[in-house]
Amino acid sequence: MKRSAVLVALMLWFVADSTPALAQIKAFLHVAVTGSTFRGGSLEDASPIYRFGGGGGLRYVYPSGMEFETGVDYVVKGGELRGTLEDIPIVGISEITYVSLPMLVGYRLQTSGRVQPRVVFGPSMSFKTDARITYRAVGGDIEQSNTDDGIQKRDLGWVFGVDANTRLGSETLTTGLRITLGNSNARTADPEVLHTTFGFYTGIVF
Picture 1: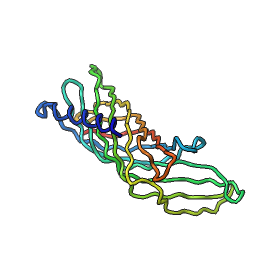
Picture 2: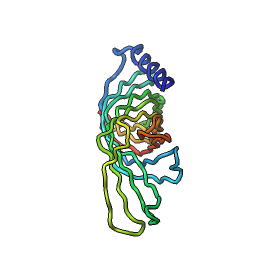
Picture 3: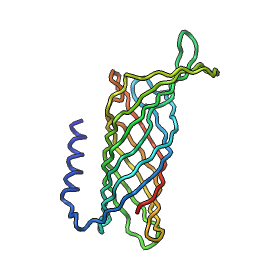
């Protein structure tokens, strides 16, 4: 966590050191299809779950190609787990709903065409709003859903992504791939369990 705090501080220094007068501020909205699973602990056999998400925010765009992006995202993390209960094979689906606040530094490749590739990196702090786990017997239709009280209230992750911005008149269509690697224990108990979330995003910058 100390290393994470240092990297966050360096990113904030970069933003503070940049000249706001040179930045063009643009708003964006995007939707996403995301997949999420667990890693670590005893969950090597976890499978991803797929959900919809989305959000919006602001981009500070500099002539040099550097960018800073922040906003609010709705995302569902979790995974599908398999086990046994009283010798009966069961499937458990963990769904954890978060509101995420990413702080991303990006670099936009300078090209003469309409399409401009972009790379982004930075931390994202997620705040839990709901957590549920649903059980069903393998091959069965009956489900039982319970609140999962063993989830941490916050989840820190690191975001890596590649985008393509396509100019359409005065607006810009943006599409991209993002992966978020959890850096903190998702659960309140050991062994440590981390999130891995990947997604395809599309939206508009205006």
